[in-house]
Image (cartoon, rainbow, N blue to C red):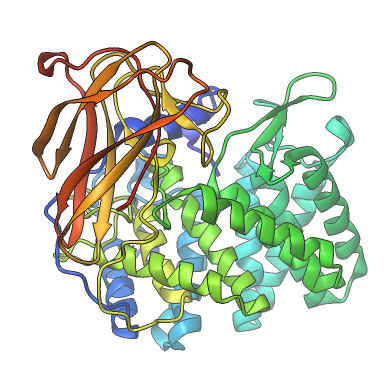
Length: 511
């Protein structure tokens, strides 16, 4: 589950974060808000299938324009979706089938499996255990839906192959790769195998699967979870170095693993773990309650994995907060679809642009409308009005930090003393003028920035008085006239406007 073309050279974090920082989706004008209804769910799924599915090949195209672009790891030189993406798209069809009971989606479940095996005649040539693991997990879900033994047998085979790479290095865990290169043990390999093992135990009655799931989970929690923080992987010599990249799918997978363990054992600590992972993302990886943009390529699918597992937790606990969160995000995604083809892009907080959309991104938007119960709400989604700067879109030399005390959320944006922008996709229930508070630190003295709304500069040189140190925070306010629906708010540095000096930005609020 990686950006293979980049991550194989040790640059996965840079690739995803660079996408989040620089590959800002093309933004069009805000459209009217619409209800999230069952008809909307149908519209989103039909748009996804009609745009991406090749019924002859029984396989999904990588891109909406059926052309080959930069992410080209799949069959036919990248024309078709790559290995682990196809597993996620297969699950999206299962999401639709479970919602509708449609014979069309039931047929597609079998057809996609057939099409995948035609393209990948030997799955074991894939050296990535996480890729194989996503198929093992999806196969077990297909078995639960259809009762077809082939799916269970394939899942069992894959689980055994993957589990054979569990050893005592770093105290336990399954290796990410089977060929010994890029040596690490990560959340994306281990947590899904807990879920698969529990499903296999339930299907076969073999308690050995529960024993293995317990072992994998215990290591994953002890090595890759630190308090409420879920880390990405461990690498290096000796006891290893834990790499603490924040991705919503890591929280989603440990959430799913913890829930599976709770349901298998009844041990309440597992349920606590699942809720902790869920609430970290809801509280820290959102923009005004909407799941944040995590980049293109693999990153565009991360929130789908989180949301899908959050929905399982929502069902198991009847948690109204989780339901509300999922419904708001489903509505936000649908409101920002591209109406020409009903495809949803990678950033649910802003309109889908006119360029090509990748299949994994589109599946994420379609999927949340399938597994989330419709609430029939008609209107925009404004959320809680707080936008953490570290979750916004940024350009230039701006970096994310969390070294100075007193910040909110996961951190703040820093290192900013030259051309660059922080872009907030702000959604409003109705047109109004808002008094917006910008929380900042100015440890290098007085500074200034411009502010624009929907392409119009409303303050060319807004002053941010010195706070005396980088660990001291203050606020400035500005009145912004905003439209109903989508608004693009930018805080930027432009020396021609007189903007000067370093500035750290924590969040904006009051929207």
